[in-house]
Image (tube, rainbow, N blue to C red):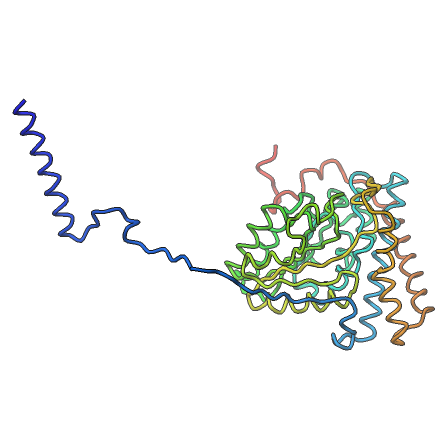
Length: 389
């Protein structure tokens, strides 16, 4: 028993000696949280300001747009509208299969955006409601229709269909089917612009449903953290599939989410092409200096979520009220009132684009089916595909 007591005393003395030695060397011999001070403010408050771009706030003179540019905006919007109307018809005739998400009602968003960027240099990526943006960027209507028909001459060689329009030359990088999945890709494209020392901006589009995906929050955080040249554009068409934004988002003012990432937030009207043009112009100018931003564009789709959606979730009379705000009608009225063109001139443009769309259908009808062996192509950049047997 005495031996055990002596042994314990030796161990205790050894511990005391080690502790004294550590202390003499400047080591900390107590819990680290007692040496650190974490500042907690007594009170906390912040004030945020958000830029707004309301309907009717800008004229084409304010935006330094020529009369010809305004007429071209009208042509672009009419092309999208007539293209989508024929797409609906072709789907009903079973010429188009799979999903079909029409852009009818949102044409001012695509047209106003594309007219404000460096077309052919800046990049664009969007979700599955992609026809309008593709056409606004100058994609060939025939190739777009052929893609919807699943034909070899389609913009994605008939492999992508409605949700996967793509044109690398035009700098249109999709068309993506998974909700919100394109947002990190868009931020990645912006990272590439910065890494390569380019002065280009990536417009990254998504819907009001996608803004609640985790992918948005992760991408927005990195965009600000790395000061990337990206504009996060939320096309809020009021419904995520059949659920209104008020029922899906605790904060339905989606532009306010910019404050969580210390980036500027703004809201524009998607029913006024000039409102969108000005908002995108301002946002891209910031992006070129390394300041990303979030822009909510409030618009409205006149069709269901997809071609099979009867949209019975709308309130009675809601669609009629919204159609009175049609951005195409607004621009048409503006052009005539400003003396830029006459009603007859605009009717002639409408007839031209109708024929363009009919020609696109003929092109798609006459395009061949993709050859079976092409199923393994366009997967990897290299010519061979060693990971596919």
